[in-house]
Length: 527
Image (cartoon, rainbow, N blue to C red):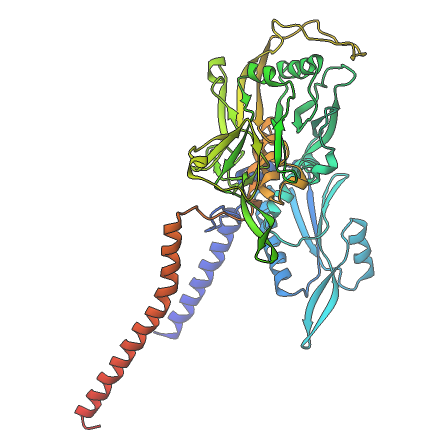
């Protein structure tokens, strides 16, 4: 090949590379081989960032000479910000700033709420502790939000998109948590609050004065009340729904305790109201062969040892309605003494149900007497049911629980109740019913992240704001292994034990025979 042809081909190759880069800038594409497409911007984020009508600036304060793990975070974050910028039409910009040892840049980062952190670095064969910055701030108009420390970029898209949405919204929707009937305080649900605060204004709703539930409450959330509701309190809740309000019911029907290992029925006086909406929470406790483990003390001879045992009354539910964005990409939800839900009346009332979460194929229920010991002897008959509903959604036009019924104002009520213009049929609305009010509380969640993601997604759905839920669920944690029979487990263990030594022996024999064959060939040639 002549020198002229070589030069021509090199120039042609460079031209093709430049052309591909130019086309790549205009038509941004990425090949993502992960199961959940965690490195690809979701359609919701793309649409969100396209609506930006002013400059949205991200300032990422990252120290440059960080150890490799942190450098990977920096690289992944830059790739993600590149994607946002590609879809934003010029209104999304970012810059990386290395505060280094420049005092003015460090002060700037700290003014934005980005604190220095200490990281362990290896220098000159010694481990040292050094100061570093790994945070970012979002600036839009006169608003700002921040991520003080980026320890992982696993679900950074949700952080960025929720910040874009929060900062570009003229007014945040309100989520009202009902209080006054023995519900847990909001600080006991801090992890749920943290999720909701990214998109909503979280407030409490008190019925004590008899005033209607404010119309600006996008969704009313009832979590684990313990006291029976009075007639007029139910009327206020009912009329909120009739006006198009959305409600999430997280209710206990059995007051069970892990410490006492005993439960008793809990009367909230809500059955008639829920049944008018087509739903009934049964007075039972669901048990499931797929469950969480608890630590118990057991006697072993003269010793008392702590042992992890499965507790069938803490179901680990992983059977989700795959078509629903509420539970999409979730791994498993751990319930804390859940009751089953009867959905048989819903369709007869012209409503549309959807069972979001069910038990596994080996489950059952305990009724009447609730003695719940982790060390109980399990029998096959205890797990003869499958797919018991644990969480459902209902949509449609609901009939009022007070259409032809007196409100029931008793002498304990001293406020003013406006019952004129009573509505007997609702606008199109929706509710969510879960037979467990504990699983979303920090203390009883078992630290299972999917519990909070599920409730966050449910509230998004109620507030007609489901778009970012699919991104949030990418944060879902450990994927549980499929349940297999004891015979299958033994077979797999046997394969794992036997196959590797067998392969080593086979390879050794083959190599031994090959050496003998080679030696014989050499001997035949007189070598």
